[in-house]
Structure formats: structure tokens, C-alpha cells
Length: 265
Length: 296
Image (cartoon, rainbow over all chains, first blue to last red; front, side, top):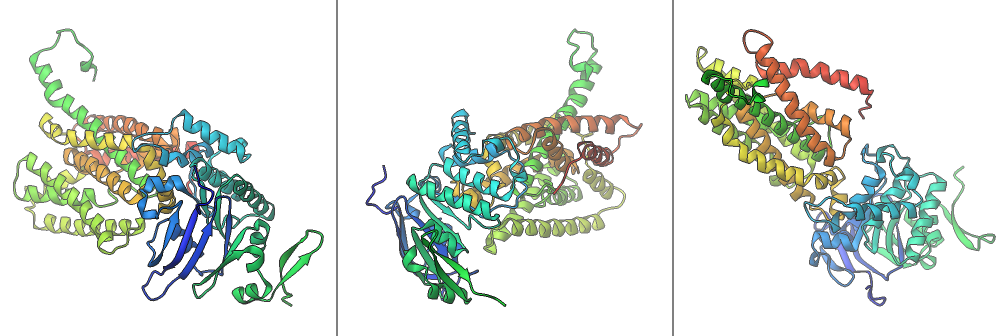
């Protein structure tokens, strides 16, 4: 169905600010094909989440345009839009007592009518996705009792069951231990290989390097540098971005560079 | 109650009157108000993501109290009191819902805050009305109305609110899975294709209709709308697909039992709200204790 030539996400000259003359980001250009990954880096408060929310059609742009699979967000109804774009929120500290199965099946909402409740077909889909995420053992556990890493996997499962080919993730590796961070990154790479287009925000330059693909650096002034990760993530740009002594060091054993902080003593 | 089941012609006209004119409407009123208050409490708790919320949250009972008091001060008939209670209850919630719109802040917290403001405003008006009421005739009627009772329940007082209750309850029951989704953040709900603000508005309208209808039958009754959803949640879990029907059943059973107590526990009738409070609180504690619930 998806045309390989047509960008899944096409953002042109996008500008948005909560107040008129104070843009959070300006003139942002993004063009992603199905299967692309874009990692957005930026210091706290730079507007990474705001940018995601704009692509999710929560706030209207002040200037510029967004096209999702060739159409502007406002041309979709809320339900149709949810069939195009899924969203994985930051890990929730909620005490939701739904079972993992019931939580994941919520992703079927855009496929169901207003008064419909999910049927056995929807549950089969949820079960399949839960199995795909290796979470079958959690199926009947309560979402509120899961660990951070488990929650994140279950949240991704909910986005997958939505069957939208574009997934936006807000800091998917936040609050996770090192092993779980890498587990989530592997999942993201696997999804991109299946043709999902993924935009995520992160605080870790190394994660962008590991994911490869594209990186956008959202600078405090609101401009975003977008390009292949290798071209964008450089010692100088990172040092300026975070105003910290950072070093890009080539690690021969792994055949890639890593971002290392300078000594602090 | 047993009169309901004896179907052989063994009764006198007098017995028939007691059952059909006095007892049966009262039983039905108890079932309806119990179910309505519990269901609207369950809905409110879900959409405000807070288990301490009761159907009074947005001021419906306070508004209804003011309406009833005005009607009593104007010496209206019982249907007038009902009508005024109903309308003022709805007016109070409309006020509470309009503030977030005027202030262009549609967050849940803003709505809760304006509910608190409206409730306090209404209870001040209530105080003023009590103050100017005639202490011999009007004041006792107001106080008695506010304590809640089903003693005056008649067919005529049930028939008018019933259709509203039926429609509102049906909508809520049909939407119960969608209402689950409102317990997520608004951003998540929207990303799942739900118009969160609209759905929340619709469910508030339905819950308000339910509470206002219940209050205009029985006066203010505390506790039911707060504890019954909790008990249901303990029994069947958080999922509204089971929790809403459980609340309806449990609420009507609870109210019927409480009203029977109110009627029989002493030679004079005790106001229902006092009974629900006195019996409800210990029962609730007992259940929390037995279930060793962790409330977070």
C-alpha cells in the first residue's frame, strides 16, 4: 500500500511557538521514507517533545507544513490519523490496574466503532504482538505492577497493535537500566527493518549513533540540523549543544565512534 | 418484599394499596437512585483519574440543594421541588464546565478546581437560603430534603426522571470501554483516535443527568457514589466493562438495603443519608481491611 517513493513523514519549514514571537522550533525540515529512523537530540527544554506533539497534530504549526503519507494532518479525522501514526509516551508512573492484555488491546481503539468493545479478533492481534515483544509471560499481570523496561515494551506493543506504520516515541529509553535501554534500541531497529518509520527523542548521543539512520539536533535557538547520523553527530556540535566537554572516540573493536564525556575532576 | 412474590389472590385492597402505592415505588426509587449514583460515581472516578472523586465533584448536589430550597421557599408542590433541584443541579455543573472553556485551559485539574469553586458558591447560597427561611416551616423542610429520604417516593416522582436516567445510563454502559481509555493521558487518548475532550464532555453530561435525576427523587445522599464504585473495583477489577455493570447492581442492592434499614431500624424513620454514612463507612473500612488493599 505504501508507495516507497512517497515520504512517510514530510515536514517543511515548520515553525511553532506557544507565544507568537517566541518560536520553540523554526524552519524544521524532515523527510523520512518508510523504514527510516530519526533520533532527535537536544538539551532539556529545547522543544523535542513539542516537536513530536506537533507532528502528532496536538498543536497547529505557525508556519510550514507537515505531510503524513502525502496528506496534511488536518485532512485526517482523529481516528484516521491514529491509523497512520502511533505514539509511545514516556514511561508512565501510573498505577493503572489493567492487565497487560487489556492495556495492549486499547491500541485497537481506532479500528473500533464508538460503542464497540474489542472482540476475540482484537485480542488475538494483541496476543500476537505481545508474543512478538517476548512479553507473553506478562500477559495477565497488571500494567501498574510492571518494571520500567517491561512497561516500555508493553507500551510499544500497544502502538504496534494499532497497525500504524509510523511510530513516534518520546524518550523511549528514559528511566531504564542499561540492559533495558539496549533492548529497546534493538526493538526499534527491528521495527525499522520491518518498514516502520520511527521518530524518537533521546538524551543519549550514543543511542542515536547505535540506531544509525538520521539524527536531528534541535538547538536552543529552535533550529534543527538534520542529516545522516554520521554527518550530524560530531565532537564540536555535541560540545556546543550540551555546553560540556565531549569527545567522539573511534573504537576499533566495534568499528564505530562513541560519545565520551571529558574528565570532570 | 415477600408481598411481591405472593401471586394468589389472598390480599385485601388495603394491602394492595400499601404495596402498590407506598412500598413498590419506594423500592424502585431506591434501586434507581442507588444505581444512578453508583454509575455516575464510577464514571467520574474513571475520567478524573482519581478514586476519591464522588458524583458531587462538579457541584451537582449542591446546585440541586439550592434549587430545592428555592422551591421550598416559594412553597411549591413536590414536583416543583423536583424540577428546581434537577435544573439547578444541571446549572451548577454547566457553570463548572464553562470556566475551563472561558479560561482556555481544558485540563482536568482546572475542571476539578472550578467544581470546587461552584460547590462552595452553591453551599454559600444554600446557607443564605436557610438563614432567610422561616424557622418553623420552611427550614425543617429544607434540612430534611438535604438529608435525603425516599419516604415521599411516589410513582409520579419516579416517572419523570426515569427516561433521563435510562438514556444516560445506557450511553455510559455502551461507552464503558471507551471510558477506560480516558484513564490514560489525553495525549495518549488522542493518539489512539479518541477525541478525549468530547468523550469526557459527553460522559460528564450523562453522569450529571444521572445524579441530578437521583437527587431530585431522593434528595442528597452521601457515600453511595463514592464507595460503591470502590467495592465494585475490589470485586471485579478496574476494567469498566465489568466495573460499570457491577456498580449498577451493587449500588441498587446497597441502597435498597439501606432504605429498608432507614425505614425499620427505629419507630421513626431515619434520614437515608445518615444511614448510608453510619453503616457505609464501617463496611467500607472492613472491606479495605479484609482485602488488604494498597491505595496508591
